[in-house]
Image (cartoon, rainbow, N blue to C red):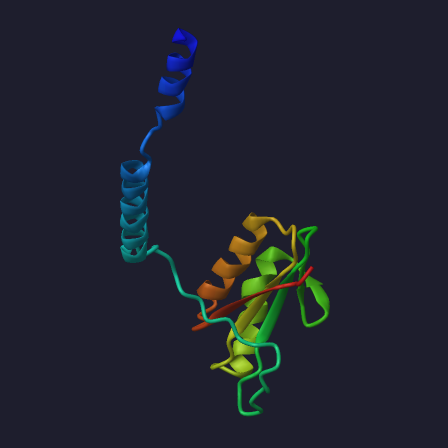
Length: 135
């Protein structure tokens, strides 16, 4: 008979989960409210669409291409890094408002890119635009 009494005590012993569920729901609401007030720091970038029409009144850019092997190309010819500034100044003499666009291939060394950007700034360019090859 004792065994029957022990089984009834064990079967009747249940844990009330209601307080635990209340705590879980309160924590869930707390984290949702806190997450909605957290603002991530960052920079907003407005990228142009590929399908935007080109304005014919825009100035023609001076294009400097930096290849992945470190070669620098301007006007379909290879240019030494020391001659970039002189070439940009020559092209600026024709059109003083022309911006410079630096196209950088994937894998190009950052030192060459920085040298090209420095040469453009030293040449007196007001605007330096950056472009990268897709791929």
